[in-house]
Picture 1 (spheres, rainbow, N blue to C red):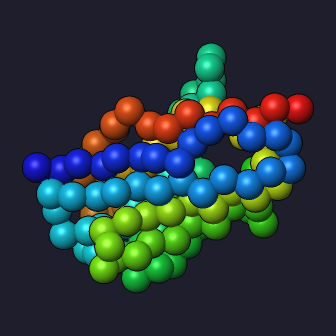
Picture 2 (cartoon, helix red, strand yellow; picture 1 turned 30 degrees about the horizontal axis):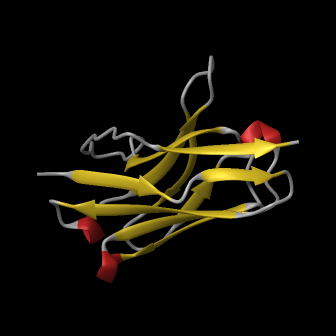
Picture 3 (spheres, rainbow, N blue to C red; picture 1 turned 180 degrees about the vertical axis):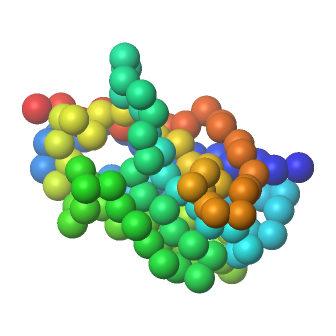
Length: 119
């Protein structure tokens, strides 16, 4: 069965960095495009970045140049390197299958990991 477990969140100061990890199990990880999403209190959940099984990436304009999505298919793990963090990056961050994938995909919302950026 599918499991996606986020980790690496925490409290950081503006301008700081954090690396999130997503440990995947229960499916053939390398075959699926994945994504990072975030949801701030009172706001809609938004797509942060996506990565295909082969490593092609896309980013929301708000994080472009600051965040880097990557994956290690041998480790069944996806990462989000977050640099130059801003208070507006504060949110719960989730990994999931890329819901924009054109052929349809799986869906798994876990607990997420809290990222808080202080000003």
